[in-house]
Image (tube, rainbow, N blue to C red; front, top):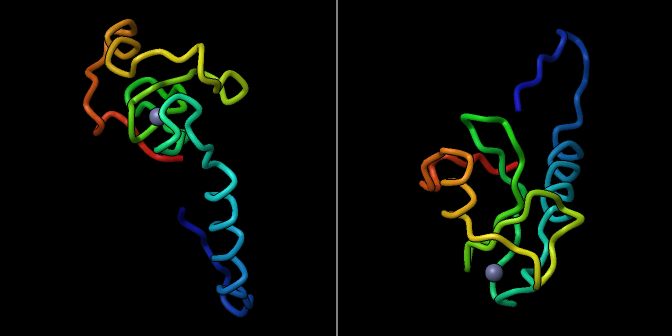
Amino acid sequence: MERLTAIGQKQPIGLDYIEVLSEIICMLIECQRCSQGYVRAMRVRSTNILLWVCEECEATWTSQDEVSASNFEDYGTLMAGIGRSCLWSELEPQ
Ligand SMILES: [Zn+2]
């Protein structure tokens, strides 16, 4: 995240950092499928769509509201379905 700060404007850097950190923590959802990993919001670089992906078992959801044990898709299958490579490098953590 890039922020332009005007000269003379005082930015409490420590406070900013905590805000960003708590945002990241809020986005971590324990995976209901494997109970080992965390589901993280990821943006597919080439299409800009958001996915919620478990880093442990690669279960994938297309909406945060849908994250549950039963209705996941496999990351590789989903990416193949939209004609994308299933490399992790396609994803950018949000
Ligand atoms: Zn999982």
